[in-house]
Length: 461
Image (cartoon, rainbow, N blue to C red):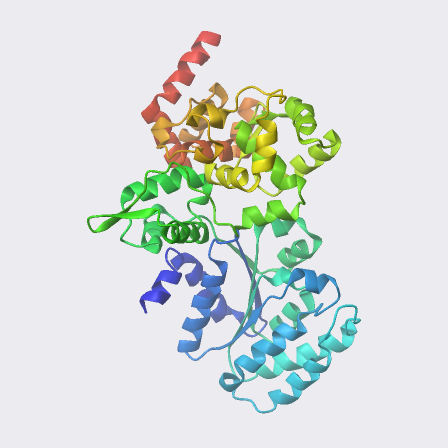
């Protein structure tokens, strides 16, 4: 029971929305999209909802997404194999022997190898409609599809399940919203549930009650805006435990004396960097080593790496699009958080050593300057009050947040786009360790940043 409670920590509102949707799904069906970053808890939410519904007698078909690469090569374009596996797993709960015929029919449409042509759409749609119509004829049914866009063309499956009155819940990542397939799904959805970062108390409960508060302080500083992501925090804490970096101090565990915390090797952000090819991780490590760099520095960076400057520019754009690099109003780019910077440098030692060579035409990097020489000792844990000084623009933005203004109104007042204001806030979250607008205002007040901004504004006038 404790394990189930742990898996849904801080998601009571989302579970309540799912329960309400199930009650209102019949007779026309309902499609809900659960949207959130990798590791934010989408799978756990769907698993917890499925367990609760089964315990109350609702039949649940839990469809697991397949490899997107496999889907794009023509294998299981419509998710047939995933549906068949789900129906077989829960066959006893559906209590319908006639369902065997539908499963057998779908099995015939299941491609077996790459290059095999996908089944014709009308035939697939007809069998899916028959199967879900049969399932829903005996009472409420919830169809849960995790990572739905791992299926190349999921719409026939979702529509077939919703049409006879099932509640369909499908999960996607926010960056999936940039694709035509996800845009179509969002257009079809009756409701979208966005999973945001968890509050500190929920993160602490998930991580375990044996951690000293100083560990969470270090994690907040190292992970920045990722600290509210339960998957990231749990994986990072597990990695610290495995490496023996959590040491006993009475009945609590504290962090050892090493300064840096890195992301787990298989973290989603590091996987995104690797998928960009060899240049992506090298440019990420370069940014981490330098602390930050501007577009004017790109020719020197490309020359030091022995790469084409135009290709470096395109890769930098992709690093920004994937959320690995964030920019400020001055156009300077930096890693999303210190833990990402440490990981990037650790994975690309050769690139960093090349940059650090005597022929490199760079000023002494920020990370090296702050840590006494070793890029792997970068990003020591800091509290928000110990963060580097804020610019006048940053302070003015936070001052307006304290006045209750939205990002759009702040942008209008300062002559900035709404997206620029959002990027600036992301930068501030990473720099201060704060995770909310309220925390930013409190941190600014505690450091005198807002008072400094006001004085600078009067001097300029």
